Image (cartoon, rainbow, N blue to C red):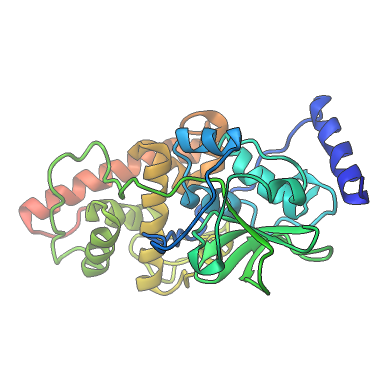
Length: 334
């Protein structure tokens, strides 16, 4: 047994003995969803034999879900041998936590994780959510994020981050199933999405982003109205920025400039689309936008935070208000 495996085992035993598990960070709960739509038709993956892989597929966990789950831990310090966010995470600890948050149990060490799921022949055929293993024998592991990048806990003195894939992985494994669920519109809105009135500020941005991600444009406009009053330069006391009031870490995870309205609306639309796919409810998607997806998961619903409890109905009221504006083709009600 190596030193890493020994320390990992100690951490696992402490967890089994009931050591309290910290709440996951929500700072980057909506990390950029870069899921590719298809895989190279020449891929020759080995059939899965792992019960873990089969369980993940039956549960409908997609690679996009994995990337979003890992994104919650952006900025967490690297701590050798730890899989507890409060104490820090090492590379395999990050992988175990991200999958564990989705109900998929993986072994503790990188070497064991690199045997899970099915083999992917090359990086060119990798999808977001796949595991990238490095070293012979395997001594490092990361989660592929798409576009040649990975989310990883690199080494002592660094933090969980997104960085380019360095070198050639010695193993690529697919544990999550490909995403097959299209973007969802809010369940409460069963009629076709209606275009926004030109009197709504940034209507063209909301409309185009809604079309890209399968959302109701009034949802994006309502979030902007409640968050910033349509002010692209707004900065909250907590540090949220711009039209859609994205926290700096969240904006970084989404790969956008929070103070650029075009980028901010696109990032917020992806965040809301991901939340809708993850939680299947407009109320919970909005709660996750405000408080983070981790908080919604922990409390099994809208978290008991006064701000979030007030936020959800406020945005829904703004959506209804925007519908009135559209019908009347008049100015936005205050």
